[in-house]
Length: 375
Image 1 (tube, rainbow, N blue to C red):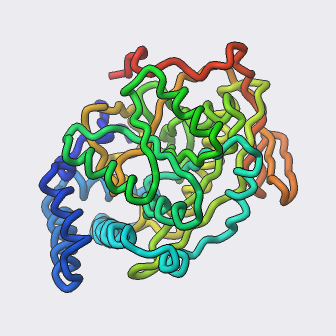
Image 2 (image 1 turned 120 degrees about the vertical axis):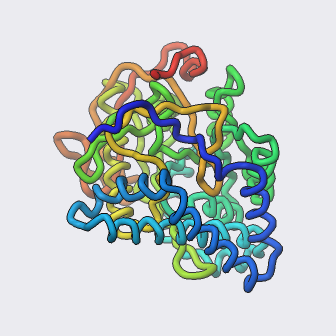
């Protein structure tokens, strides 16, 4: 079902300085007996009185639970708002934890997957979706001593943007704001050459920088830039998801690295790699649907991004844009833990991509501001 018109992913009145600043101060400094009831009261008000948010959640979750009634889906929408609040509160409080407390409170499964990716010496592109507590991953990376760069959309409100940067600086993560400089892709490449981990959200696209994928039997679009950057730099993609498991506890799960070769058809590589990540995300959502934070109608849209508006996510939207062209076959690579191959290049064992012709000039894609986003 198409709802017509274009969606602006990041326009939302919940992202003003009063709401974001107040929740930042309250969650970090107010006593728990005060901050939690206030936060949950806010979640109730949003789910009860902000019809656009509630209806979007209901429409999105209908794909996951097609046989449930509207009343059942509304209850799920309320739980999503409640869980989102819990994620924000615990993330804010985790910023002041000691390294020992972080390592005790975070369950980090299959740490070797990210370690193997970084051992290749080309950095790593950490990809995830608007699911769970992705920004809390920066707290874990600091405790593990993994240098982190977050690729993010800037906030239009200077106070909110300052808060976003301050939070990331507290955990030692630097920020690259997309569409602010002609050399943004080169900045990302430099971070990867330094052996850093670059984090990007992949499940919302920016303008024409998109690749079609299917989740829950419906088509949507992912950002193609992470795959294109992997093709052009040789840095592996590492899908990773982080969820809250009770008050003050988290579980982080990296998946097998996706290694991208530099020969072949880029469009095919981008689609297959993105579809593999979409399938991983779909399984996560199926297991914990209340952790899926898409507060806009997500299906069958041709969304556009208002680069002057903020994201509704706890840490802001981590998206970068890069030009796409070409296309290639896909092969699964599992690092030191084995290899797999299938006719379409994707196996159930883990993700890996071979494709994308090497850029003869050794340059990353041109600045995306030179392309007009579809309206």
